[in-house]
Image (tube, rainbow, N blue to C red; front, side, top):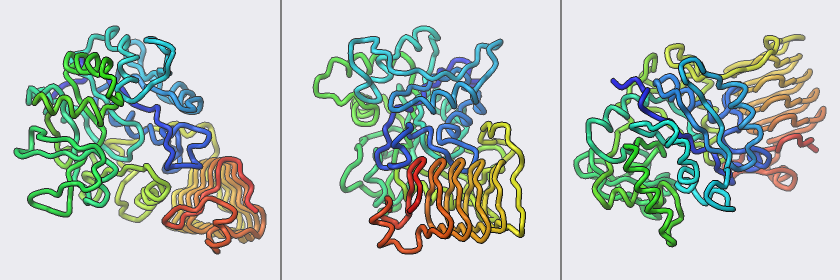
Length: 405
């Protein structure tokens, strides 16, 4: 198995994440907090680092300050052995324009590749929830002799419209790649499922360089990895698929094997949190053999006083539950829930405060949101729609620093 020393990791983290508004109104999507003490980008970085890929460039662009700060303060590897995780903002190296797409982001940052001269390049997305040992995918890529290998996973056809859909006859070579088709083709052995791209690619370096240079001169291209680069390599017969279901991670359970969730919408972000909190979770954050790495900061332990309780919930450091009830919820650091309040089926991000007697149900409260004493959130959705953002699935969202009415 490869040790990752001949692989450069490139993480695409410049997306705006419009469908996650208002959580992305003031931050890049990969910087959105998740699961208490993590941010979305911690999942891909943990997978790469634990998998031996320890030269990693994170390409950023949209409202990247909190993301850049998080990477710089949290992801410090050993400089003695040449390991690093570094944020790379758009630098306009090829002219006075920002990144025009994910492929253009890499094309404008090829100095990173030339500096390292890797044999292979792992290009991974920054905002999915999963565990994966990238070495197994890299080994499969090397063995196949392909120019690019795309990680694939089965999903319901109804969900496949949001992804690149892979068609393969032999399970190895990609015959066609359809970016977000309106009517995704089903699988021969399962007509109601489609095989979709996870947004993770392993390239042989020269193949990627040639594809990016060709794409940069194509005026009809959108300069996107999924829409342009991968279909071009499929057309030349250089694309292979890696079946994610065959990836085995140390410490995984039968229940969370092969788990992968795209959190592109408020409802999927909320649902991914519900996957964390059961006794036998669908996704287990407590796998010590393949941990999702994070730095929770210098905070005191969570405190429960005046009969405060939490059940079926994740409570982060610095939280204080004072005479209140928290059920089926995830609380990030420094959340305070005051006497008589009820928080049920909700996600509360850093520093949110729920006042005495307030009720918060099926809601997401962003950083430093204040719910005054006696206020009700998620109790009357018709009323909430006139005050706050309410998702298609009925999740009430209050943006960063907002004060509830």
